[in-house]
Length: 205
Image 1 (cartoon, rainbow, N blue to C red):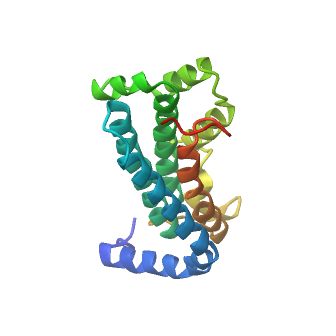
Image 2 (cartoon, rainbow, N blue to C red):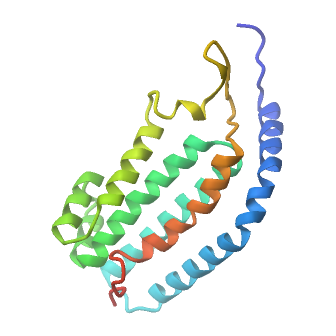
Image 3 (spheres, rainbow, N blue to C red):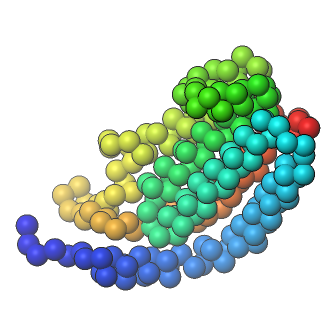
């Protein structure tokens, strides 16, 4: 192997160039991004005004968690780090699922207090027993795991093949504009999904 092609300063310049290319997608989604974060702020403010309780406090903690995962995912998507943005998405879905569980069964907040939160698959099973449709949740989470884990499924985010015999590895990330556009539009929608555990149901008081 020859001399290193990347150093930290070079990687910073590389990321800056990717972000410049993402500006069109950001402008396209700016109104939606601003609206999603504004609406989520109202949701948090409403929770903060409710009488203190364990489930209310856990829901606030989960709100912070999902917010940070979504925001981190947006930053990573903008920088061309698509797989890492998907990992943030998958983590956001874990917070969403447990929030749904606390909303439909407030005593589940006790598991959080004891640091005994069930594994994601167990959370989905509990939701299913409570009558919550988790089919989309299961499919999306499974897809995210496939992209994030080591294997061929998410390979296209780490290399660019010109032909079957010629290509390059994407050190430092270099997500396609199509991927950036999709993630910048999709990730803020998770903030809305977080808020409604059952479609059409009223938020528990």
